[in-house]
Image 1 (cartoon, rainbow, N blue to C red):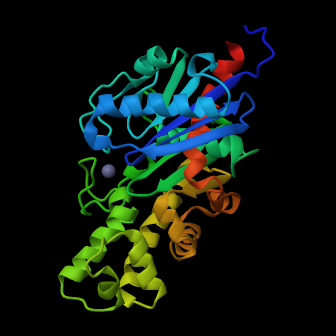
Image 2 (cartoon, helix red, strand yellow):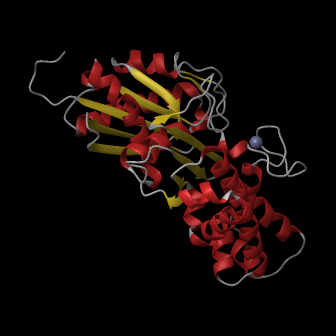
Length: 326
Ligand SMILES: [Zn+2]
């Protein structure tokens, strides 16, 4: 219990495979300072943890505080987390991380309590508390990026399941004999509709000797979902077909979610979602054709208004209750 006049502050950290973002906020979630740095994941867990400590220290300085004066810090990580112990297990985008107790390590180093969760859950809470989902009771968040992930809000609360592993929306199987997925299964939504899947299809088309606009745009550069979308926009037929196919699969995934959860809203974020209407409009059409009419009529499909800030806002939301009760 603090008796000082200084405001009580909390922080959120979004640890991603390529960048770390940290924000300091008031207890009601108003952001006072934010900064980001490259993760430099290739340097291994110790170096990354030190970068987080330095970053939180710097953001605190801008906000006029110190890490040990924060009430709590929420940390969102890109992989499975044992929430109670704060241990992150084998995140696919952080090489060398195996059962890293990131919660306790950061609590010790920063001198303040921490709460750890995965980034899909954090983004879902972020959108529900601060974004498109404010006021909804039943909401899903789906990120369509290099992977496909998400989080489930039921009755206004994040649904974590029996072992905290619920919400892997990207790993419902859409095509039994589909392409291999990073999780080891075949034909997951992630293997068919992610940015990585779109890029993989484009590379296959290019490898067959295709010489349309897509080939010109990709010459000498990286093949990613954005360049495929750009080619489609410029009238490339093969690129448009790739996007349309990914959109169809995404629509089948959305239909399954609508039938399972009957949500009021599905918020879609992530890099590939920035392709926007060419991906999302046909996906929504497919969902409305395939899903049961009653739940389909109740759901709106919305692009994430928080975009890249959804996860860090969720990390802040994770600790609001902890901070208020401490
Ligand atoms: Zn999978």
